[in-house]
Length: 292
Ligand SMILES: [Zn+2]
View 1 (cartoon, rainbow, N blue to C red):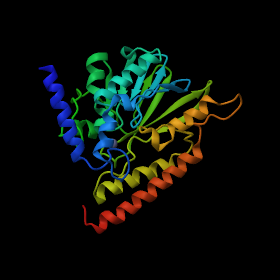
View 2: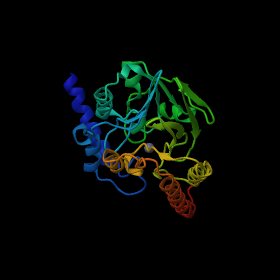
View 3: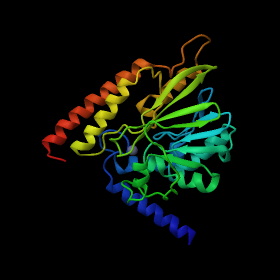
View 4: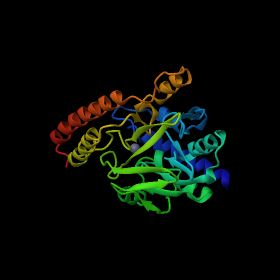
């Protein structure tokens, strides 16, 4: 029976992959069914986990990221991956020498399957407390948009302006809607050999949604991020949006006294300008199409 349900799941997955034409979190562009199933394949998605800062590790897959934030009082996991890729994240955490049972909080940036899909597993198997915005908690109770996932048990809402303190660290939450109605972004401190740096994660970047209202709220979110000066490190929830793997190659070859390749405020703020320009172009199209 188990085999049968696995097979059914696979068929269902293949069918849904064939139906979906758009990328889940990558702006615009078409992704073929073959590419989509490649995304779900753990062997193709495997990445050796790596340390980026004293207290931040990459534990994600190739196309979608997960990050482990380490405090003196426990671990915080940012995003859960989904399906078989969640196995990779768990394995990565263990490979780095951490115990998934020490995850105090799982922060979910938004309720698309690639970020929230493994949340229920972290609740059931490791007792992690899951946090996302109230709006995206609501989304988890509605039919999934791209791919089904086990519904997480409602835990805590992360509201705009609220903080999460664990040990000596404090993370700040921001609601930055657009990509989903309740995208969660976060600011936190990372340490480069003890030296603090201000890091930020924009929790939902892709323009794969429609409507004037949503596009306007995306634009407001980006403009708000632009006003937050002093961000030095861009930590993305899809590695490609900030060149995480390329930066990690440079990090591995970093010589004494050289700057940390992830500390790059100029590229971050330029990137926000690009996001804004693309969204403004989208707004023109949405208006022309008469989408509400
Ligand atoms: Zn998404």
